[in-house]
Image 1 (cartoon, rainbow, N blue to C red):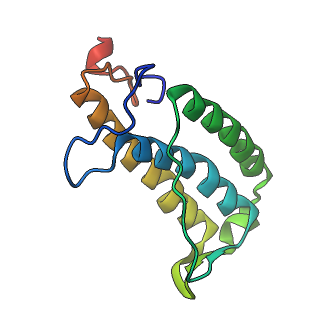
Image 2 (tube, rainbow, N blue to C red):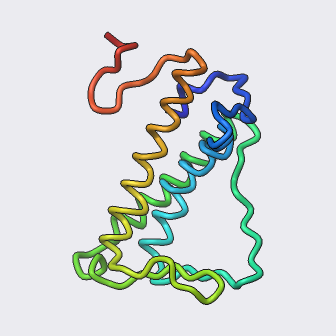
Length: 147
């Protein structure tokens, strides 16, 4: 999906008032496949204090997005390869401001907050690409643009 972005992509594009801007959507998709995946494998808890100011990743360019993504995915794959069946049963928590937002096994966190979340936002990115009149790559076989 990232490769389908035009080289001169406008990361401020927003297809609807309630939509994320394209740069934030692409950045969030990248973070999910990399940082969320890495944290889930390497740690048992991600905690932010109440005064934490989250800085979402918004890429400066398509090339910067792909470079950061490729580097992060390589690390995520390394960490995933280290996981044992026992690791998947360990508890993982996401706490912000003293409140637990996620408190589940690593397996369920991976399935819900890495895989499902990534699939959801990948589909949103596909919708944005279609509205930008870009070719959509196949996800589960060829897309209509590839036939």
